Image (tube, rainbow, N blue to C red; front, side, top):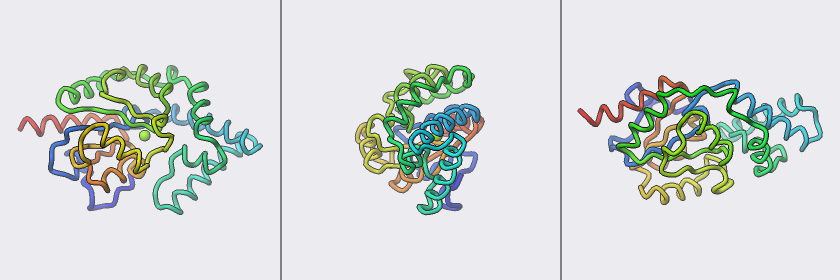
Length: 229
Ligand SMILES: [Mg+2]
């Protein structure tokens, strides 16, 4: 987590930077609604296979290039760079990268459903409008959601295919605010990477909640509990 200390509250309460109760909650998917290191490595391997082809280098070298380029982009911008952005920097094409992700990656052997996640989302969906906004593509994110039992729980799912501009992207974010029908101050964003999922919405006045573990994610239920008080 790279949130600036003292600006946002990442305490166990909820990490909201606005006192106002949110109308809409917008979730990230990968690393947020499930956490699986081996699966993220599988995605990284698929990206490396593609970058190897694009650059005419062995897969191992491509993996190192992705790592180096990501570090350089992060250092030069001060924001953590997404895998999508890193691959385009290395000559990759976003649509082809995602075509490969969709064709080559199977979440089934990696992800184990945890019933507490759909339970949490169902509880939240009864009181808030819940949405999903992911840098993943429609096909693979759909299979992941099926696997972890959360398909059909969101009012709308926004994927990379809606704009082909990966998070963080201001224009896409403004489209999302319009689509959910609430100004930034009435939206809560939930994600695992501050720079990619949360920094931009926070700068526009949304509340944010950073979570990188299931235990932390489940603490979101505090929103409901707070409301009952
Ligand atoms: Mg994520």
